[in-house]
Length: 285
Length: 323
Ligand SMILES: [Zn+2]
Image (cartoon, rainbow over all chains, first blue to last red):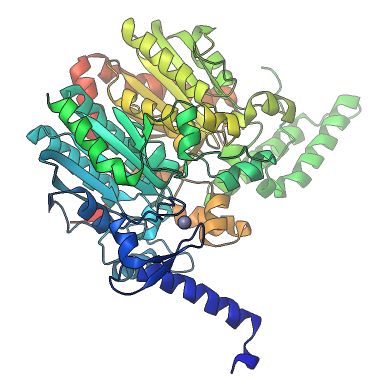
């Protein structure tokens, strides 16, 4: 059989193996996982216990929203779980937006690219939003914008601090101008939040780009980021194509943004809960 | 009356006019030579050109509208400032890093009233465009705009903003100095602005780079302006995996003034002269000016609180989804 394997088959098989490796990250048990960055074989359970940070090179594996919420909260009550995206422009590229939404729901088990709700973190209340890259690359469409707006409005009502974890490839292009308007909407709601004196902590995770970085993700009273996360407005490839210039080392990574004054702190995932607790405590007292 | 300037730089889809313009030229030469009186024929030919142009423009496809919106002869923000406002004084700099030539702004008089004005600035030539970075702003452009909005607030003057950009500048310096933060901050601060704010998209409304100075109480759009989250070329290369399919993308994305009105993103379409704003910049400016005044007037009687609520409600309701 192997002798008839074409280069394409071989490549596909490689791809599949890679995907399986990714999927296995969610399965507890006797599975070895290879670190994407350093190649180290890690016992899946150990990786889980290390909050999905490679013990050898500290690479932060991507988390699903469910994993994030589990790692961080004592309790979590989701709000607005039923909102789903709508193909209101009848948008079709190689696939219709309707089909893309359906496929993403089946693949990710999520309704859209953010989960929002009321959380307790080490005994402190917070209105928590967690974006999920596994749903259409964490792209922001009407549902993401609306869920954030409602979360913040409830936070104002309950006087809860707001924490939002971002991860996004940018705008949901299939919603065209309406995805752009979500930048306006989320920023408007954050303006209102600010008026009320309720704090907002933004946590940027890998990757946070485009319309999400240029709206709510950069507007925290405190902006935190996980190590080595790509954080940018224009992606590195777009910049390279435009200016035809080699990008500086570490460009658009958390540490680079910290050095340029755009972040308050870069926090290792294993210290994130404690950092958030300290902040929540500061704002409460 | 001065002779109407013949605009010989044509849009790609105006090709049917080339032949007619050649004929017009010949008629004029004959007339000018003094041997024949061709005044009537010249008039007729001019009428015919106008009629053909009107016919072409009565049914433009979205990608043709993109061409008009981007046309190098289209009036720029400074062109409009000169035609709409009196006593414009340009104010420079963000007081932090530099002065962005891609966003201009200052103080001016509109119909006897003091206003603060700003807008993206493109050029009419490659040289001008290189100076202006093709209207693509750096963070200091957005910060200059915010500084001017603050000035307007402090002295209780309305803000008028003209939008014409392919997008924010994608570059190393822009990213290092916080392009994302600069735009995000403007979005939040624009909602909280205590004075009336009218924005008009005059050419290209390119993504976050456009929105960064566009969150007015009223958003107007010139007839052949566009507003989109990504350029049709960008959308085509990502979703259709082929930048050459930009025409399809332009259709699918719904980016025209009519689309924006239907989606509730813009409040009014401003009629352009036949053949587009560049065919008669003065008329285009006149239409733009009266639309700005008309939309600004009712806002002048609102309190700061009401203005903020008006803007909040406008943007809070943006979005279409299943509940
Ligand atoms: Zn590793």
